[in-house]
Length: 326
Image (cartoon, rainbow, N blue to C red; front, side, top):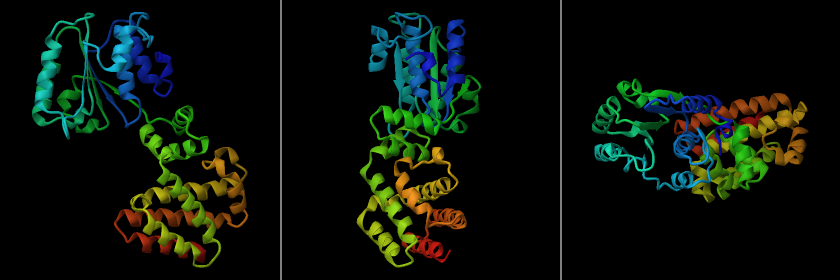
């Protein structure tokens, strides 16, 4: 991996690469952005680029230093994660001792602090003092999804680098490379912008079941009988996991109804459920555009109702009846 590999975060990669090439790295960075945006991956790449034995201002990924960093056992790099629910003062004190020691393999020492917003007050104050008077050659990378939860005095001592959410296309591409089917990868990537969450969803049996039930329910809604109500009852009785994920079920339903609209207006390239084109084609013949638009509004209302703790079964039954009434 090289700096050019970070195509989804080009501004962050170029800024760090330029600073490294010109020997103008800050002593402390704050990487802020959503989970799964690649903050830790880029922090590790910067560390590799500092220590790489083969490339200048970049990382080969194959030399001993790069491999040791990847394995988490380089003597001049320390990674700290929350101990339980928070980063504690003892962890920061230990970090300070580690960073005060002479570097083993270069002039640099690096520490990466994950979820820095989860520090205790004592730990945050201790880190602040450390940031104010950093030892020579020490570079800090603080990672967070919640920069607003960090002391302003800490923020003021860091160069802040913003990470954007990964695009749905980028997430789907990564999942396909990992062996996930293109259809499931595309759906999961439009449900969440978090790569790890998308990976879990795309590989979960319950998620596939949830989608199958959703497709069945859409078909039954146009039959104007009680079969859709029986499907809802069975779904809620048979799986606690599905019951917990009803907002996700409704998100899938919105995407499906939108896909039927795309089929009707011949925008097949925009389909999310692209692996179900035959089913979508069939359903596009029995739904009108007005019904689909009204149905999407009803699903959104139902999702809001369930998230406000309405009875799930009653809310879903009401949704079906409203759709059937047109």
